[in-house]
Length: 167
Image 1 (tube, rainbow, N blue to C red):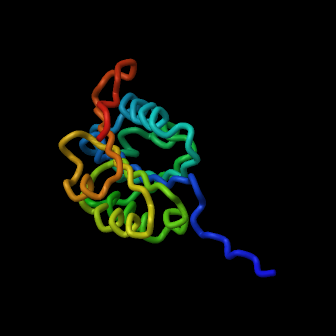
Image 2: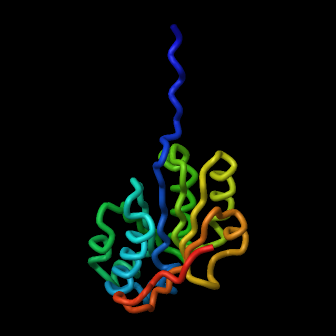
């Protein structure tokens, strides 16, 4: 009796990338209050799902908020210098990380146009694409690819509604 070939895709598993500086408008704006609001937003949206998270930022954000890694427990935090350093880092993660291709859902927290080829490729391979970003800053091509879009307002009060709604 032949055994069925195991699928490489693990059902109901999500893989997410977070472009921290994109969400707050630059490394100078990275601070504990905004990071906690983002974490609360992500918990409200995806808290019940098993997700492998990878976040990226530039070295200035870490200098400005030296406890940044503690605001995102369980998240692999990567740093890369340069104007598009975090974007390039996350694009490489989405392209090269085996877990991204084995997931049924990809969550892109940010909205930079550099994520479009990655999102398109992963969607072609059967992944569901979810975007979380600031209203007016998510690339149109990314919105067109996405199965779901949620808007995050980084400057809303933590106790107020920080999630503006989704498409």
